[in-house]
Image (cartoon, rainbow, N blue to C red; front, side, top):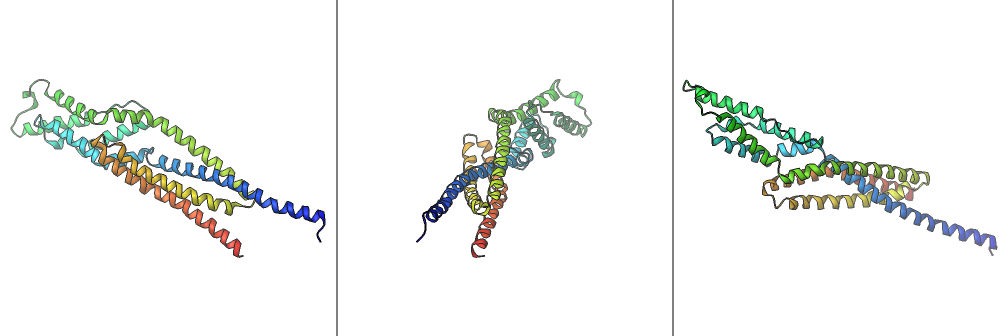
Amino acid sequence: MPTRSELYHQASTDEKPRETVSHHIGLQILGVVLLTVLTISFIVERTILNKSFIMHEVTSSALESTILDEVDDGLQQYGIPTSAVTKADTDHIVRTVVNQAFAGQRLKLDLSPITNNVENQANDELSKFGLSTDILPSGTPSAVASQVNSTVNSQINTPEVTAVINGLQVARVATNICLIVSACGLLVLIVLAILRRHFATSFSWIFLFGTVISWLIIEVVRAVIPQLVQPYPDYSTFAVQCAGDFGQTAMPVIAVTGILAVICWAIRGFKRFK
């Protein structure tokens, strides 16, 4: 028959696993939250808030073609060939806008390359007939330049784009804060789990739920982005393309956390059957 001290020792031993499990659950919940925030923040920083990503999306989308078409329409009013404005010119404008926006600067477009092309095209057309631009009505070159400037700026400097630019800096700061805080917090949890020898047990669940939740959030964002621009038809195609590329960029990151989950579960299985 066990003595009183042996019964007390056995009861104390039985209670410890419950306390440990309870403590692990709290750590796991916090870990899932931190991992999800870290994953989503990292993806957003690499896509929507990334200068190179946005540059590629605009220059390879129908939005740039729309800009080019509208500039061409304006030039046709003056009998200038549409080849005066090239895709390279439009790329230059887009790159300038994106660089200035991400730098938090006021947009200032230099359209001199386009207006120079216009004048060169006019000279070429007139020279075929042995004429020069001196015979053109006074102010015609400046009128063309004004038309080009007005068309391009009306397409780029819309209220919607201005609102995005104004919120861009705030979003980047907030995302960076989320990245730093979540990364530091997750690192602390990893150290604690390793020291207390339950890393695989805790982080198998953390990586599993973090992966699933992050994937669901990405899918929701992909579906919402096109819906947000429905009132603005000029941006609908761009939004669909941006949403698709956003998802493609996000999936490898989600896959990494999924692989880590599989590794942790494999470690748990190995220890169990060891």
